[in-house]
Length: 299
View 1 (tube, helix red, strand yellow):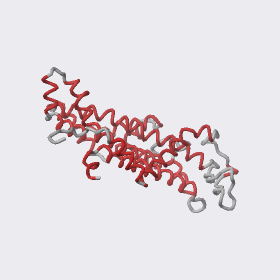
View 2 (tube, rainbow, N blue to C red):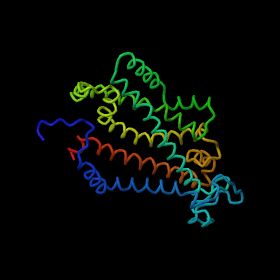
View 3 (cartoon, rainbow, N blue to C red):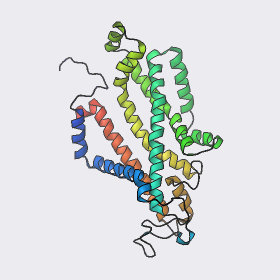
View 4 (tube, rainbow, N blue to C red):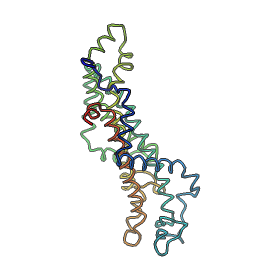
């Protein structure tokens, strides 16, 4: 309708239909969704499908090639590693760990950064100065060095590494929410709500937050892939999870010494990591198209 002002975060009623129509027409979206769906399903069902302990060693079966190569066995479809552990089973259990770290750390980062950025942009003043200086200080250090420094002090395990990644990732959400809140507080609907007697808390939660949340949702989806890569990198360097954990970074690190005689442990773990990051990134990109009205109008 002419003259109608639509807030940046508003999604028309037909938006979901438009999104799914574009999603199912795009081959990359379908591929990314299918890969992520299979990974999530196998990660959840791994204990039921393969009740074998992924950390159990079997030295007589060490470095057995995949089933389709001479010397391989159907009992180990993707072969075994240097300690006789089944590569396929460890990859499936590794998917559980990587997806858990990626999604949980992203939610922690959003849970910390969104409220702080929203408050900083809405109120301004000393709170804004202090929070933004903290953001600048943290951004002054390379992220990987910050993770290494913290993990060198605390005892790394699944939950400590997830929390460290999530807490360290709050700055992106905080900066984005601050910029969005600075723009939204100038709109007339905020003045109208205040004139009707609404307090700051109600204005922030009921009016400002719904209009600024869409960009942060997109950032959260992209950060899942970033956290998965970061966690695998730290494990590869020996600074992440314990060595026996079925983690893709640990699998690649352990297999480096056998690359000349056994390529499959590192190759299949690297392929699983690449496919996961690809699928999450593709879906995050399509989610951005869905939540950005300008991109939807251009299409």
